[in-house]
Structures are given as structure tokens and as C-alpha cells.
Figure: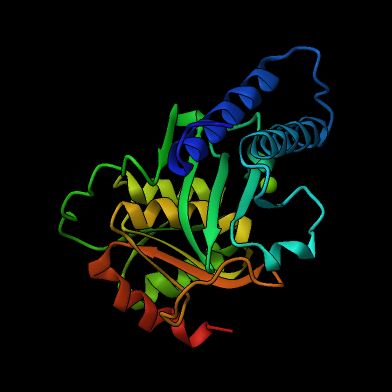
Amino acid sequence: MESLDDHALAARIASDTGDLLVALIKDPSQARGWGGLEYEGDRAAHDHIVAELHRCRPHDSVLSEEGHDHPSRLESDRVWIVDPLDGSSDFGYSPHWSVHVALVEGGSPIAGAVAVPGWETTWATHPRPEPITQRSAGVPKIVVGRSRSHYDGRLLQEALGAEVYAVGSAGVKAMAVVRGEFDAYVHGGGLYEWDSCAPVAVARAAGLRCCHLDGGELEFNKPDPWSPGLIISRPELADQLVEVMSERAW
Ligand SMILES: [Mg+2]
């Protein structure tokens, strides 16, 4: 039995999976045709994470973007929610992809890690990320999804005068807030629990506020893993973002 605690196990698996994916990018024998590397990355990362979790935590359930959804997870006390490769369309083309590993108990993530190999960093719930420094004066800097920039970005620019940036991968966007590059990550459309679970675990450990567009509590390991929107924000900005975004809450 693995002796690591859940925080360290999440970090080790996310980090090792990131290394495995970097090795895949560097492997000259990998197919470079449209979607070939992305497909292989999804598959290899999923297989590695599931094998490690089964080896180290044989009694826990797993919900993976790339796996079959077993309804038994709804009866399980401990469920790992993983995205083996988040931002897969950037995989091999930019640093904006990540690996998400989180453990949920009672609907909340209690441990987790996000690896961003392009930034050579894995963030975890313990040890906690460095506390975020005081926000610099001036307009808020907000990161949104590339597919959402015309909707969320425009709304936030008009309502708050925000500087808005579009980046791929939910994990990368959330960690960019954790490391102080942006003040918030706002996603006004639907996303899946594997997109948000580990990023939320780590962001909360860093002292950020994480909630639905209407300010409501996030819940994980629901029967339908679809989730209507997400805000990850410096605490002092969160209420303003909820006010702007709540009108679009589904
Ligand atoms: Mg994925």
C-alpha cells in the first residue's frame, strides 16, 4: 500500500503523468497527423493515472474524462475526479495544457493537484501554494476560455473595464490566477467536473474563492458531471464578478 497521503499522491501522479506526456511530445515516432498526438496523450495519461490509483488506493472510485462512467461512484465515499490531459488541442503546440487529479469526499474536493509541465510546475493542496500577494491597483485582469472570449470577455470588459485574456485549458487558467498573473478566471458556459475539480481544490488551498456564476457552492461527484459555469477569483473581487455573471447563471 502506498504510504503517501492523498495530497502527496495527487501531486505525484499529476507530476509523473505530466512527465510521461512531455516524453510523448519528444518521441519522434509519434504520429503527427491531425489529432494523433492528442489521442495518444489522452489514452496514455488516462491509463497511467487509473493504474496508479488502483494500485495505491484500490478501494476508491475514479471518474475520468477518458474512462467509462461507473454509477458505483455515486455510492462511494472517496472518488478521484481526473482529467488526464486538459487542453488537449494545445498538446504539443503550446505550454497551455495540464493534468488534473483530485479526490472528492461528500461532494467537495479534499485533496488535489494540477500539473502544468509547460511551466515546469505542479501545484497541490498540501503543501499549499504560496499565498497570493496583494492585487496591484488598476483594472482587474481576468482570464477566460478561448471559446468564451466573445461572450464572457465582452461582458466583463463592459461591466468592470477589465483587461481580458483568452487562454486554453481550465487548469492553466486557474493556476495562472494562483500564481498571481490574473485576478480571476471566469467561465460563463458549461464545463465538466474533471475540468474544474482539481483546479478548484488547489485554488481554494491558495486562498482563492471558487463558486458558481451566481455565487452558489460548487458540488462534485454529481450523477451528471456537467457543471454550469465557474468563477475562481481573488476574494476581494469575487462579489463583483458574481454580480456581473449571475444574470447568465443557468
Ligand atoms: Mg481531457
